[in-house]
Picture (cartoon, rainbow, N blue to C red):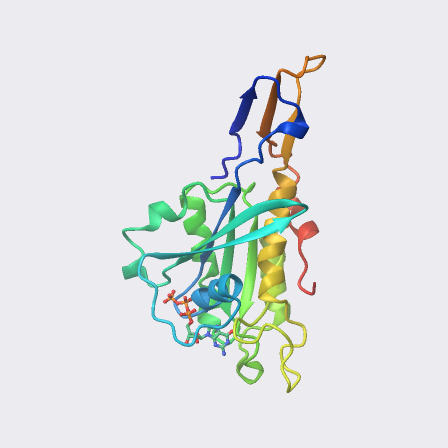
Length: 243
Ligand SMILES: Nc1nc2c(ncn2[C@@H]2O[C@H](COP(=O)(O)OP(=O)(O)OP(=O)(O)O)[C@@H](O)[C@H]2O)c(=O)[nH]1
């Protein structure tokens, strides 16, 4: 579960202008969904900037990280690319859900079974005590394969609404519009993960605080508390399917 309650305390004659830079925050985002929906490709696309030439079924979990800067703060986005195949998940599943800050559910728009599996993935999160305060998003991948679409935007949007998640449709292969005009309404993979990071940052701001009336001898640099603004009802307010 999200854990931003830690605080770093500096004692001595420090003012905010002489503070050392805070440690880089890490946002842990897990990416889950059926095998073959494109979790590895999506995370690779975001972290390496390209579509991987070849992938193999993930065993356990792979980590990918990218350092980004949001409003002047450097943040490490750590993507946990989890195995979709049950036999490759078993031993690792407890680790996936520890200290998670956000969850990305992925289905393949050309594979209705992967869409129908989503309730089971949501249930797995629930069983690992992931609360509603943890932001979740739904990603329909492979929308470059327009001729093979089995899961329409309407039905996906209904599902997303019912579970208070923003929906994004994209392609890890070609996240921008294709020459043939397909994927016109897709979101860029970049924008999707950055939207999550912005959400997490706004939810958990770094707060510089001095004790009221204090002399300035002690400065607390603490991580802001969850203001509760991202509960289930707020989910639609922080994402959209066409940004
Ligand atoms: N056309 C197309 N193919 C994709 C896209 N994303 C992934 N693929 C292909 O789908 C297959 C599976 O992709 P992976 O990223 O390995 O799938 P995964 O969800 O990580 O699978 P597991 O590791 O088994 O859970 C590969 O052959 C990819 O090349 C996409 O956006 N468009």
